[in-house]
Image 1 (cartoon, helix red, strand yellow):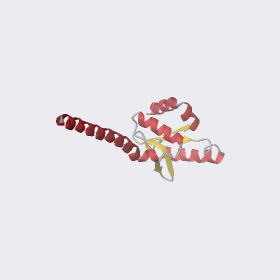
Image 2: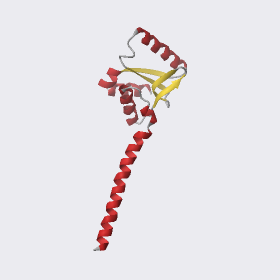
Image 3: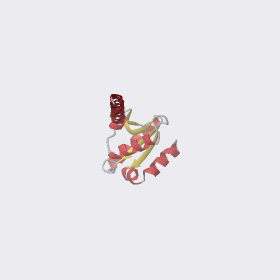
Length: 134
């Protein structure tokens, strides 16, 4: 009888540790994804997650001279800009975006811009455009 109690006790303890290890591993991976934490908007985060889930190596807020790239696929030298309407609709901001595009292209990046609306409403099409650029 004691043998059964010890046997099932050890199995129970092992099962508890296994479940805890799975939970810690899941939480740890989210905590350690520092590039994901650098995303500055919901649209950047949504696109970052989609690209990561599709197997791409994604960096967030990549410095390039006096500019920062929202999301980058450094393996392919692709700069992805996520344009929210509130920050990219004025004439001044559009001029800034054109200067930024020119600078990034001059430094060897392929620049792709997507509106927040497109990222939220048609993420599959955004991913397809990115894939076709590769």
